[in-house]
Image (cartoon, rainbow, N blue to C red):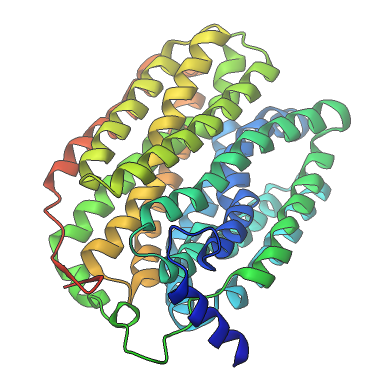
Length: 418
């Protein structure tokens, strides 16, 4: 009781522009948690295991890529439920158990056998708990602390996945090269546990004020009303297209580049460059959406990402691959910032996590089918042909154009969506 009173008083006496504002501690813990979460580890290291697993067990690329799809589809199914739980329970009660299960699942892959069913079941389990470790779980708490600086706060949290996407491929590639792929899975499981201490210590929703009623905690559009409107479905289609194109490339990036004669180290570096520029993209987006209409910011960023994919389609040396990866990462930095921001602006915060979970369903459907389609096309053609990758770029372009359909924000009164 005393701690909550202190936090409430601190949140009122210190503004969001003050480093002493308690919400920034939540942002720090969320940054670390997202950096070692499902969102940073699974998509950005998956392609590094394609060749080792194919060599060890003789599995086809499409079969291996199906594990990525299983995880993504599972995320799609369970994310709305995780969002509903986050709207009702304190975030650490969801995050900490999810992280433990996620880490143990990765560790178990170090003992993977030739039966691919074990591989699929492990990724299924990671899909169940994945968003309980990632930005979906953390942004609900962060948004309770911020109003004027919400774009920047979200950007800082989401740079965690960008930071992780820089570091994880380099670590995994180094461990695979020195000790083998089994050791790499074990290391990833240990890394996933690093987010628990700060999460348990700092991540919490802002305590409700006791001296006056703050409607920002209780106002907002219901889930049913949001689903009956066009705005949510336009957002969902944009997210699905972006996920199809980006994950279709990212999940095969290392294998695509090494097929063209680029070294494994350069391929891992390209993935890390993509993560580095995604941090820049997210920070840029976070600053811009506090000042400009967010869908227009998304248009620019998605077109930038599409240009990066087009460069990757024909890259045969390290330099164009690195430039393409840099553009892709910078452009994709917008998606993670814009979506939660738009949900809060269009629908309010009362059911934020449930609605955010539903957008993750859209993302996961696209993210699941993209890698499988690319893997299937590879198995049929015997190579990653440029026209396949150009097709992925076009999904990003179409998503950018659909952003023009999003209307002006509803009027806000007292800091909340009217």
